[in-house]
Length: 92
Ligand SMILES: [Zn+2]
View (cartoon, rainbow, N blue to C red):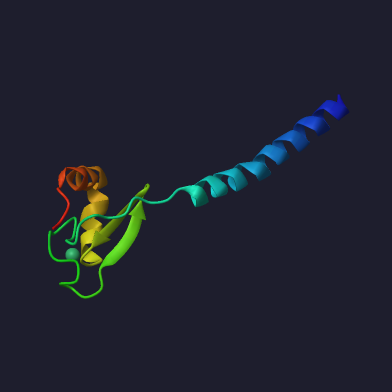
């Protein structure tokens, strides 16, 4: 009985140790889709109208906003803005 318990423990420990490692490598391989617009996804302002654009990755999509203030609006309804991005034709 003691052996079984030891085996179970080491198996659990192994799974526990391996899980974050496999998760990490999967994350590394994933490449974000590039942001195709030159305007802020939230405010529709030119990305450089407020200085340096705020760039981040949501899920596997690169997002660019004109300023950090727009991030709040994005975080409120990320799915809405992702849908908007998908429906917006490529900028000229
Ligand atoms: Zn903004």
